[in-house]
Image (tube, rainbow, N blue to C red; front, top):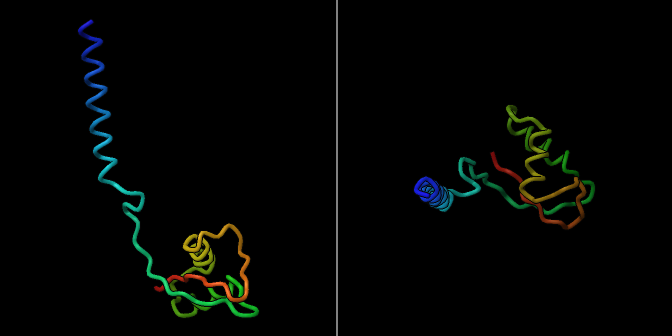
Length: 92
């Protein structure tokens, strides 16, 4: 009976520590905040062209990674853009 009580106390203690730890951490922990600017999509704009323009300004960037980042920032599941759509793009 005493071993059972000790096990339960230890379990509650560990659960408490984990709860406190999770309270003080966030989902964004360790991620660098990305600065963005807003653009308005015009005729013939594509996500690839926008990423290409960004990469032209910074040779160390990979266009595919920039496309992925633009989609993540804007919570996009596809690469479809619409005229007049506002899009956040990263600033490097």
